[in-house]
Image 1 (cartoon, rainbow, N blue to C red):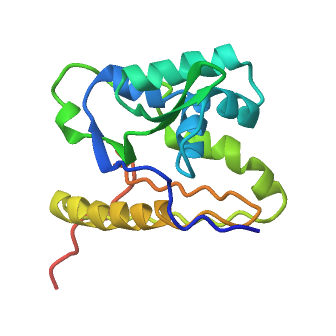
Image 2: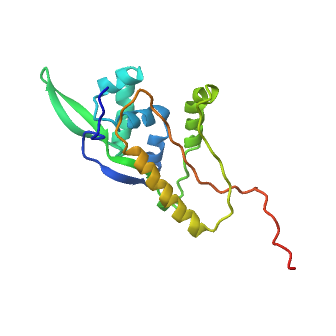
Image 3: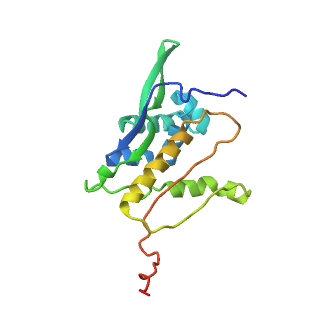
Length: 192
């Protein structure tokens, strides 16, 4: 089995902050996130992507166009095939994130933008087979610690993202840090 150590096979930015509702909507579709995931390995044509996801070429072309219009995909090279220039698409960045700068812009996240919902669907078979690895913890901490902790988590996700592609199984990594508005807390300790 070949190992691809140059992941992917084209130049791209490390991160791009998603600041518009159109960008967030573009990545909230499961087929589009699958396309973005496939392009982590190498650039691909619409035909190759359609074969990989077992969907009509026209459907995949539509989704590629949505991603390209949102600035998340770009043509990274072309190849002349029987008098036609075939376009190879690649990601604009290794990692996309919804920026905090979106807050206060009046454009809420789409209701279907939830990585945990995607992870739930993707992980169901692994859970049923006893191959699910997960943990959940709760901590009451100040906002400054949240920001620092999330920066460290983002670096770990980037490390995972840059691993050479090999093996027979694709693994998903989902992380989240979220406020729990109704989690119980103890009252302040009584003075002795």
